[in-house]
Image 1 (cartoon, rainbow, N blue to C red):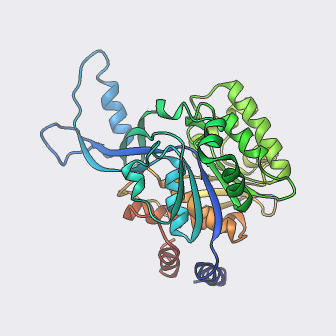
Image 2 (cartoon, rainbow, N blue to C red):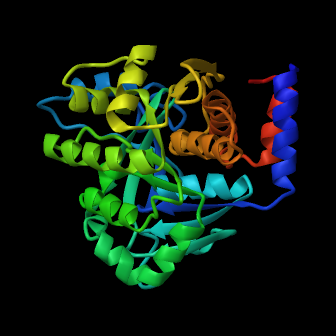
Length: 360
């Protein structure tokens, strides 16, 4: 183990024994049914392992009817904000979660969550998550999320309580901009409650933005620029999300090289940016140059849905510790690895164990 890792482990242990950082997470919420599609209706152990195989099979059924059986693996809490909140809470963060968790009464799946303060503003949406070793397809019923607006959040949480949560939080984590049709209004309202003199960390994960319009992106870019001028704006993407976002805001396709990240950071007035992939992440910040941070490719993950949210949970842990972006991404890679191999959110001790064993 190198000296940098020893120092990082010491920081993690000190934080784990200390006062938790306060984090606000919002604003979606789902109940996910995780399924594995089968090649044969008769053979229950013959699954489509890769998304590409499944895509080819479905494409070949054009003009025909087809019956595809699935094995239900689990039914659990879903949504980018709740999954991030679970990951962050496991890492000794004091999390307030606002989202579609059941209204007026919490959905039973969310009632079971421990150690998170929950404020619900709508019923959760339902998702069928088709999982493969190299990705997932999310079939979501999102109408319940369409009624979430800044006004409904303010009314159902209470304006005074909402202001207090924001004021006390060192990080505001906002995810699934893409899945909330009123997300730009939500961002504008939340940002309006943030005191520019109280420089916050704003952590944004857009999720898959392919369904949003050019006008949506135009408004989003304006909001991000304004927030980035007053606060520390952190942008997190997977590779596909980064490609779509960069194409909309620049008019051309981007990869994940140094110049690509640098251009998006500048356009958004962001202080940090990370793009996570299956076996690595790339980062850049105003404090640190471009870095490629290796993770560990998991050939047969136990679970796929939530891997990116658990990357964000690890990244957020590094951020509240004041670590450089590359070390935040290292913690993100480890957090995601633990989650996809065990199905559980990584706590600080499990992260330390992975580092001590030099697995990542």
